[in-house]
Length: 414
Image 1 (cartoon, rainbow, N blue to C red):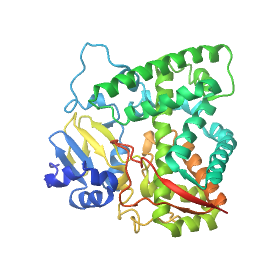
Image 2: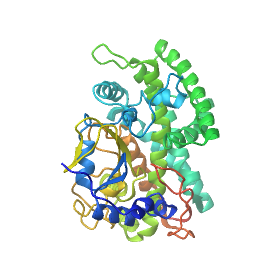
Image 3: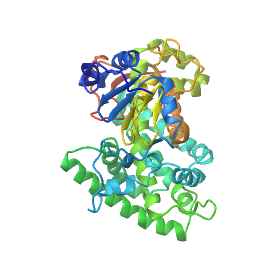
Image 4: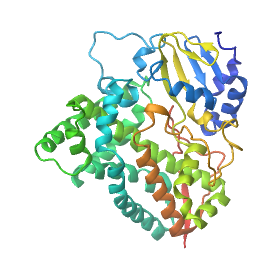
């Protein structure tokens, strides 16, 4: 075993620049070619090749999802009461390791499996029809505000069985929580205060709703979560809340991001948009290619335990590993012509929703929403155009989930 080779500091610094947020793939390719395993700082590593990304994600007992194990990077815990975000994040599946993760996933899957996704599809189709019919009447839409933002949070409300009267405040909660979950290390005190306030409001709402569902269960996700049982074990109140926070925050923003990024991909590749319009049966495979080509989740992270190694490089216990999912999805060792959007592509899996035991539970729902959205767009509109400079699209200011802030388009009905 050896230490990782030195990397040009300017290359590491480039990864955090606004230009790279706009289009990270040239910098990712440069890093992957120079050092697929790079030691960015004394205690922080970056992994960018598909082989190494898969290896790290496939060893949950060595590379921990619980960032409290990154003791070399984050300060040790104090006796002070944790803030609400920290309190509930430790009960989320994405930050848990086996065996706790396995128990959580088994229980959540009972309520949030294929049956629930198939059941909600007609409601998704109806909602997308309504949103696009409004756009057709105008002849234009702002994709994020008019389509991508209202769709997933409304679908989540449908899944949870949230009353119509409560949905406007759920939309507000989703926006605040999604931004905070993407910036857990944010130092903006006002941002954290607002996120804590919203989380406590949402948690209080959930507690009252759980109490009702325990006495009078319905055919909805919240009832399923409350009554899910695996070998005599149920989800605790904190685990129930954490799961619903994750679903509303992260689940909402990833779908928004994929609709935004997917729209940009089609505007930049009109031949592929025409291919979709002419071959709607491509659906599922085409959506998978959109996620590979420019999925919204750019990276994830892991904390190292004793004996960790990436390839030939030993990694000290307590270090932090940044896993560049988006870089792995453009690795030419795995994907032929990786920078080309090709809706007919088949072959190896991508990493847009992670890999291994932490493959995103909501990934199936998000893919269904994206498939319905672009299928309906292709059916209803002959042309889709924008006045945006596609090389200078304003992007959301976030670390993990990247998407455009706005995508105005003009539409010609079929």
